[in-house]
Image 1 (tube, helix red, strand yellow):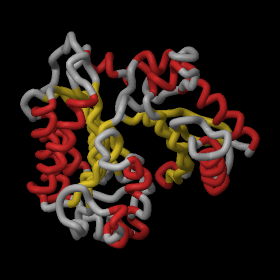
Image 2: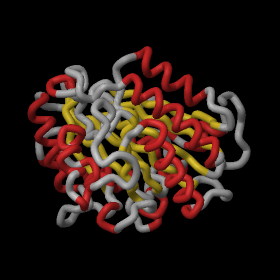
Image 3: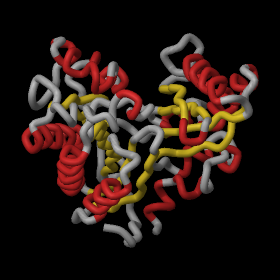
Image 4: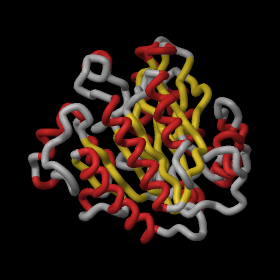
Length: 323
């Protein structure tokens, strides 16, 4: 459902991540199935060939989002084979993944949505995906069944390749569905989280290998788990073979809460720039994967200074809802 201006924020947002970023015909089919789902407003689609990943951002009532996500997941499992040469070994994308339909967070968005409702929707969705697709499901974030299982990076540790071994450990067994991963589609992580900024910054000014080393070093220094790191920040350094460059890839969790605490995208970029320069490289353009609130880009500085490719306005939830 597109082309309709929404005057009120819908209750919930889904940001579905699928492990396909290269096959145009498959990607078009994914877009079509979400856009054609009743009661769902598809706001943004982001494809990345180097990551071999696409992100679909859509909003609506919980029941409509569940049905749309089940349809997307069915198509992803039918068309993506993570065990194939195109998806493994040298053909593997640079982004961590455990499944064809890899990660599905449900995010409370509008005044009619709350964490309790999102948790109920996530549990319903997880059970449905396990039943529909005979695929194992891991719950994370606010819907996790134990504190140790809240963090998505821990669920994805080792990727699709190590998933079968990890699932044999009771600490990492699935919450729903089979005890072992789907042979071609792996598993899916279904979560509940606040609004997040998924943000990539390209590095420039040096040969590709040096850029990658700088990206990884900067990520290791800045991530929240590091001594002196940025709270609530996940960070990784990735190669970008298609453009012979490298990228600092970051997730800032609870982006609005972080801004209130003085942690903004501007302060993060400023720190990344200092660290990159100390390593002899520069920061280039950035991209927002999915969408963020307008306030998150304005907090702490002029949004133009973030150098978001295509213009910062296109990256806001508000701009997409007004189309």
